[in-house]
Length: 426
Length: 177
Image (cartoon, rainbow over the protein chains, first blue to last red):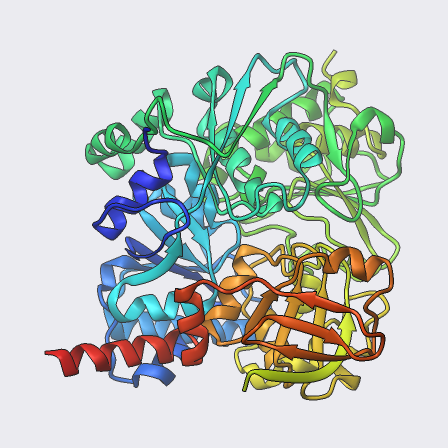
């Protein structure tokens, strides 16, 4: 019987043969933390190990300031300062301060992530780095702080689910719609503790942005790690950033053809339509056409799931096809995922058009995933967002949110109520 | 201490970390300050933080602690004096926080349905034999059974969490040298 990708990755990381269900200790390639959680890691490490203790390898530690960037509270400002000073004392170079954007995206752009790397982070959406075949998973401050001691941590070797995707998206439909469909089918615990390999012709053709969308939302089904081994243009992009070693990693870590999967699902996207996660759970899924006309107060495009250049460009096309103005009934906000994405949007001439359309175009940050971000919703308001969660009260007590693709979100902003982008893109 | 007695606080399925400890309070770094915010956003359980007593036990359905990463969601219950969580299942990330802090999570088959059918309710007196994994609802006589925890997680939890475990391991290695 052949091996799945995660088994090969964990054998590499642990240095010995493993089987599903084993508890093992893996070497950590990168232990990252955010401006939230990061200060907790630093304080915990110093409390447990003493002020003079050194991290095992300063080049394998990173900090990303993305929860509140720039900080707008003294408490967060202080937490960021705690991290900066610790990094300085420890000789940690990888500090991506408030001018960078969402951690996983930034580390990926900076060539810090390779297929097969074991990456920790205090962010439940760390696993979107599975979009380039890394074993990256969300953990708490104890996990990261403990990894500072000797660069190791414990894991259970997961079983693997396979999702095979075929077909072509129709105009106005995209990877986010597929993902929303899958969450509706599998439910909030449908991938409990599992690794998930996405394969098939649709995935082979998918851009990095699409792969990130797909992988980021595995968390919403309680999956441990999604994996797509880089191929085609994504492979070339990653080689440019992270080096030639990426090619060998892909070859040695890809799943064997006779690997065994605990579950296999097949999707064809030819006839897929725009989908939405309705209040108050990501797995409360309906087609957009069933909720079209629902009035919303605010539209937000961005986040680690859908804040890439391609996502913003797709929204831009809908905006221009719809007349270049958002409805006066809604407040619209776009947040690029990184500075690199922001620059690309500027060069493409989109930012000026967004501003003229009446949209707030912000600096790169994590977007409206917490009520502490700009754009928090007051009680009674209905939001529409491309973020990954719409749990009750998450971005403001008494508010409710619909989650959807950047195209559907922009169609909604243009019409002033939930709308199907296919009607604008005709 | 293998026998725990406490009062039940009962929750449903898919309780996310924002309901346990809302993102509004993420900047907090001292675990001692976290219990005051526990379940503030959970409809109907807004008074949890005020009324919870040391020894009280959180009982939940499937996928407890899903959603965002924040260890605060364990600290806010642990530092309120709660000895454990009983749940049908809990999320991977929440499970790690619990193990790494020596906070017991028991996976209890059938408890999600039992909650929906009212067979275990707020205020019930519970008795838990952690060695055997048996849970008795003294108020109504119902019994439940928790799964055994795997060896490594059990060792980490019994050591009091990941840091005490690693320090003890480092000590052992020194002796062996």
